[in-house]
Length: 421
Image: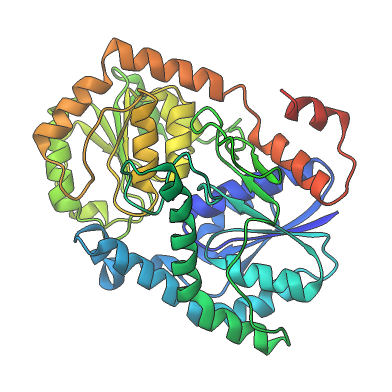
């Protein structure tokens, strides 16, 4: 079968879809992944055919543009506005790019900011759409929408919160989506329902499947490809071999990060311990005055790096949250915006991360106490248990099996056995 996957977002959005495409290729399918050009390096490393969608999300979220999102109380609104504008500006182009790529396709996997245009393109092309997500979007009474602040609510309000978020998203994307639909001869659309097939790259160990989810919704497990051979830079190898496991510090694609304030707190809290710092999409590390106990590194596979750490301090994105938990290492999640607060709360509920506030207000004292708590024997034992359970899951194989079933393909015995575990 030919399966086209389309997403738009940061590297954390693209990387899991690339792992899933690789799994589809290994099962004999032809795949093509469409995503932001700046996130495709890892896709090519996996040998997954890809094509760049119009736009530049890294520039849009850079300090000169949306620096404010991670520093001010209005940050989430500013981030959402920036991302919505990016999708609106490229809606017509995305529609044409997806339709061109989808010629002869049997199915279209749709995720991220390209969701509305992706579903419209599937409708125009007459092919089966399958929604894919790393964040729970399907309504449930068990917890509120991850895009709302995590606070206790009655069960009926939990479920209703998804409709409120869905409505707000549709209002943001309706104009550009309907204009793109009109451009290819489609009637005006409407906000997405929960009736379509939905696969999640979410671990059931991290988030058990809600009992009230519909049958056509599957919690597959994390979408990640094992790292067998990674060229370890010599200076990283020497640092890791020269002492006890270090603390990892990295905030992924949080461009606009005020490294000065936050890293001052981090340096003080680390208090001379060995640490590894990954600048990600934040401001260049060259402007930071880090002590000698910090090693600044470039891109490194989480599956390779995280098991070698003692504590993982991160932003709480879905992918990093899953990789940290899978490594069996305690986390300290310092969320900035959106669903990151949801995942930080999940880690705390699992007992593998201490309770702490968000990145914008954290103090050195709070972070120091969190590092001590994360290093306790109890939390380390819980993290090891969670990691061991997650490593028995095969999210890619399970998702491949579900995709084949949705598209009417008879799955192989191997896939059937692995997905029934």
